[in-house]
Image (cartoon, rainbow, N blue to C red; front, side, top):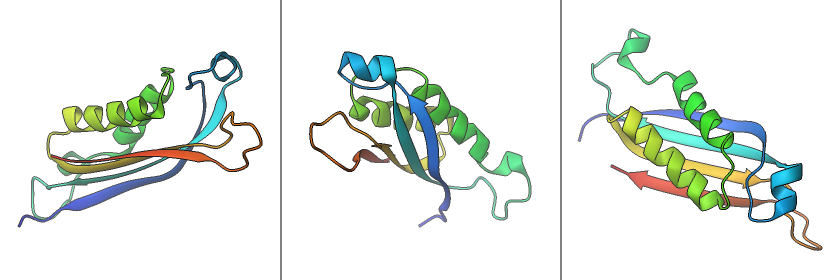
Length: 120
């Protein structure tokens, strides 16, 4: 089995406007995104940024998706996973979770998270 390297982005915070309800689209909410991406390196030993996946590029994918409001977090995590694999075909696994810190649920304290795990 070939070697897999993993890049993880942890606790990336956003203010965004995802949700079904009009107040979510107007007021927004705070979100925390975590992503784990595993890939097969092109070379044995990584000596250059060109030999790996730049985590700034992974952040850019997340950032772009977070700026485009969607109704469902499921749509968001699936879109991010698909975009990562599309831009980086060497990716073998993606795990992405989006946590909505203050979901608009009456008498609810806590957060809600949707995750997507894909293998390619």
